[in-house]
Image (tube, rainbow, N blue to C red):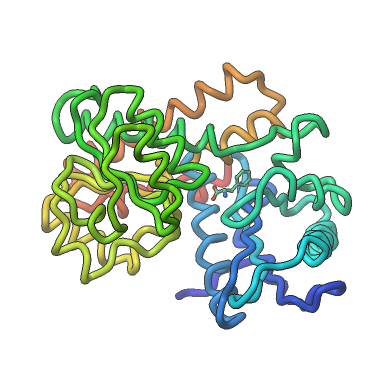
Length: 344
Ligand code: PHE
């Protein structure tokens, strides 16, 4: 990985002694934004690597979405062998809040894997630079419905590019990950009349599949299912050299960050004629809504239009990629780079 980050803080939390990383990749376009991941890592170095990659992804996400913000990310390296006690969790969130406060607005945190709205309220006890506090406390609340909405808009654009029709009804989707975002994508797809396969590492999620009339299978089976679109909505790194040759879908489009295990996997997808919706384009809905509501002061309808525009951005990228013979990943990176170079 190339190191191009502006600032990376790696510190033992004052209260918890847990390793905490706050990575600010870029503030070229404006204050950096990016969620706080609280996750079990075997080694703190793995958490650092995640923070570096995810914060860089946030810079691209914000730039491509037309936001005047840069990218950052926080990772709390939690133990793998046991969950944090409620007191430890609170203390860790206060540790995060103190470090975020030191950035004095140059970085604004928010929810990510392992954290939610209530946690943002706790971070908010230490710093005002936090998105998605509970609505009762003046925040914009849970971003996952907005992320899901943006992903579904992206799925329509993907269907349009692969079949000439943006219609979801009758198309087949395999959703991998039935968490906050994946679960809502699955619900929206089912409501739109799509055929659904659902998967999660947590067997309890079978009840959602039952409710939606979806087949519940292992993540491996979902990834290699014969469907129109595979929808990654769990942690990153799904698209590996090993998996891509075994895919039996027409397209991959979803909510997970960092879906490509390595950047070059995008080439392999193209060789196999599998259309890939760049992750940070498709999954920008949550951060777009937070910035629109909490920084720009927009009303819900105006914010919703921004989220829906993800479909147009993606359609444009699919066209550019096809016309110029590059991968969709390269086309998306070029879009983000153009905005960063212009600095506005
Ligand atoms: N987890 C979100 C993402 O990866 C980050 C985020 C959401 C940040 C909402 C701020 C507000 O895009």
